[in-house]
Image 1 (tube, rainbow, N blue to C red):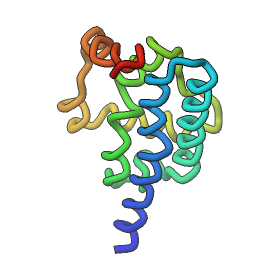
Image 2 (image 1 turned 90 degrees about the horizontal axis):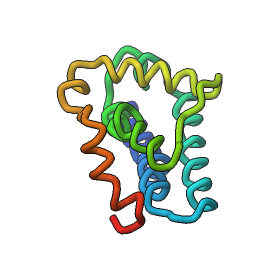
Image 3 (image 1 turned 135 degrees about the vertical axis):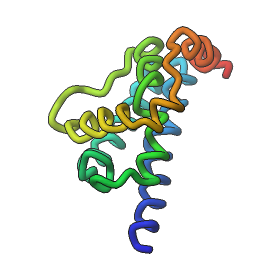
Image 4 (image 1 turned 180 degrees about the vertical axis):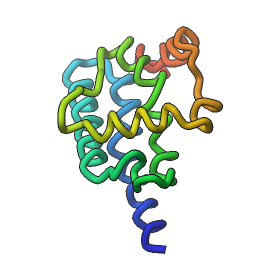
Length: 134
């Protein structure tokens, strides 16, 4: 029960610190707001990395935390963020656990089976957001 409560807390925290700013980064048209959203995402990922046991958030067990956040920070959406906002997660020590986690998630059959890998289509889907009209 305590791990479920902790997982709910982390899923909510990461939603607020990563998913919400993800859309802010796309929708905001001014550079200052985009930089604030990008820093909020990176701050959330640093906290995630600090607490991630690896290879998944709770170690060997794939959990609700992994499921809740993976669609936003693994795979093609990261490529879309780079395309529209030149946003990338740095390859530095602060994010080592994130990169280990992202690789583990990217190799899971369940993620591969449900994730899009059609970059042109995803770029088109996010165009209204990038233009601030989404």
